[in-house]
Length: 356
Image (cartoon, rainbow, N blue to C red; front, side, top):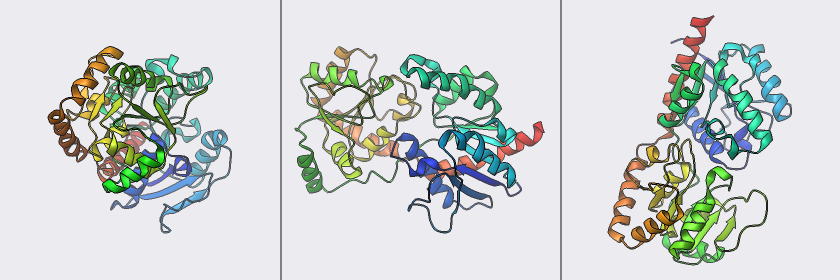
């Protein structure tokens, strides 16, 4: 394979941490440490963050986000003759056949009602076009690959699965530090935990109702989407990495009630902290759990409450899940993700050349 020059949309490296940010941080760090003959250039409309090594190529391209995506970035790629440009979701027509896009999931096609009207329109009208014009599509689970190909049939044959992995934000803490951090947060023990911005798709209300029916304390982290937080659970808002780690380590059980996920990084975070997990059947969650978590048969709060109580009363089963989670965690590596991403670049470039 001849040497490729590849520019990456690295804007998310400078944003507040989300699942998408975790993906780009993990991927970029592993790509920069991967032995490859290909040239990787990171592009953004923001200054280089501290995490990027001084030897890595960083290009500052000015422009507001939407203009940057549609015009500035693709014109930069064309002007300097890059073989491929890798971005996320929206792929400008100006990239021609040299675009690769990461699509974490197509939940907006599965149920558009989970999204606000403006977001719903942009996602459902533009992203299928981006998938169609892309030389290659990268996604983060086999479940997402199947869903992408089902909703955008001409994607078949050009979708590559590269799993996420655990980010460097979660590193298990000594028990004394856990106790100190939980005390600072005012968290009541024992407690259940659920993590994530409370969009409708995250289905946080199920965790709240189930915990209440089970008579358990629930801690919820993440940013609320409009309105005041309901009374009942302990809402922390955003927390630091060390606080989040302590919350995982101190929880009796982690609840993942999402209606749909393309991957589910919090599962890996819980596994790393020896926190047993109860997941829904939403999207890729059972795939990522891989037998290392309890999978609920439905989204009924009463069933979740019953399952929560059965698990909390069965310490031997919880311990089996703790051990299984640590084993399952070994199946996910950013180095492996980077290696498969480089293969996706090579195959996408070869595919685009065949169509030229």
